[in-house]
Image 1 (tube, rainbow, N blue to C red):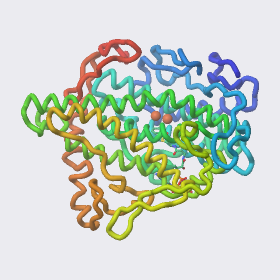
Image 2 (cartoon, rainbow, N blue to C red):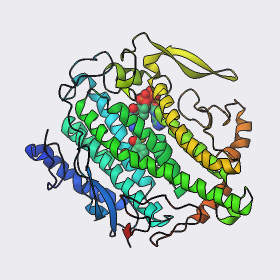
Image 3 (cartoon, rainbow, N blue to C red):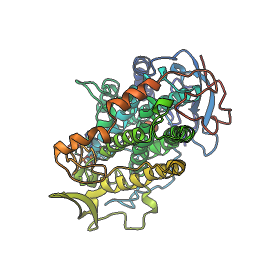
Image 4 (cartoon, rainbow, N blue to C red):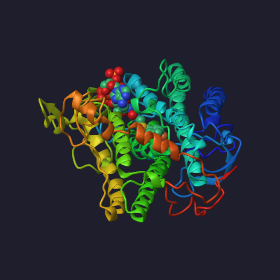
Length: 469
Ligand code: BYC
Ligand code: FE
Ligand code: FE
């Protein structure tokens, strides 16, 4: 195992200083990355000290260091989880064979594509969130936004390392293009749909980190099983950072729900908007949007791409080693949802082609957990949040373009359009949420639409000066 080289220009545990060519190539990419960060990263506070976590090692404890840092000076590093000696491929046709330390020639373009798609989402999310620093509901939240931004940028580094180290000239070109595509751009957009949607306000941000970063968790966990060992080890380490991103989403929505319930009880009304809160039906519409857009990220229910990725050992399932089957799936079948006339039915297909749907089903189960927690808070005012039907507002897969209500009923396109403003954020919701987005900067103070968190970061109090303004 290579030791951690923290004093290098690019901190790393991949022995970069022993490979001059690679080191020089990455050092040439670095200033372009910094330019991108300064022009497309957080729109403000780049000169302020922020209390941030920086990954510094990969051991079980003490993998991160907390201190004040100005964001452009953040030490973005390349860290792979420690190798497992004698690791073998855990699934697919090559199950049991030694994992690959180099890219097998016949899998080169597929692996590059998976890494590029993964890598593209990371800077995209930073671009989507760049204006949120102007409207943070507290200094604690501002710091969490920046923590997520610097870590998504580190995830970009993680994929760029793989492209440079293992894919030669094509890989370097792809790494350059990762800095050139722009979220929401008409001519050169980011690759996946959800990463071109705006994140205009903090309610959207919390739902994005709850639902879309959670797609990251499931995709990274699948890639963490990969037979391409450097990819697996990279993703294993990224997953440690990911937990905080989803915590920010779950905690953020939980705090909004708490404040809404407090206001409903205090004023004895479901309409808390005049009292500076966010109504439950507005929350439900935001949830419907972010959940449905995130479901699209799993691709089509049946996919020969997904079957090939699995059969060849490139991308496994969530928790592959804990599954009790043959891990090859040749001849296995499974049920996927389908449309038949007016009805949503389920259809039996080869399990290998259904792997996107399988991963999505695991994701849905995970999404449900946060709702249960929020619903315990909402119980006292007899309100609830629900996940809409899988087919609601979808652009990809069997439900793509179908007119399905949140309850799962197939309707006409006209009826669906008539229901849109009650199912998805409407102009009133947007306007009200926008009106709440005034920044609160004093340490420990919170905007009126959100309850304070239960605790601060890294044993610091909630009133801690997380950003020195
Ligand atoms: N938008 O065979 P299918 C994260 C395309 S999030 C646009 O079903 P496949 C993060 C597809 O490319 C995790 N296009 O596709 C979160 C294909 O095109 P071609 C990101 C889409 O390959 C928050 C065609 O439709 N990581 O980390 O089975 C903040 C047929 O589809 C979309 C990954 O996604 C879409 N939504 O599945 C920061 C992991 N969906 O080949 C970060 C890597 C599908 O016909 N990616 N298409 O031209 C993959 O594993 C797969 O590429 C996908 C798609 C699961 C995304
Ligand atoms: Fe990420
Ligand atoms: Fe993330």
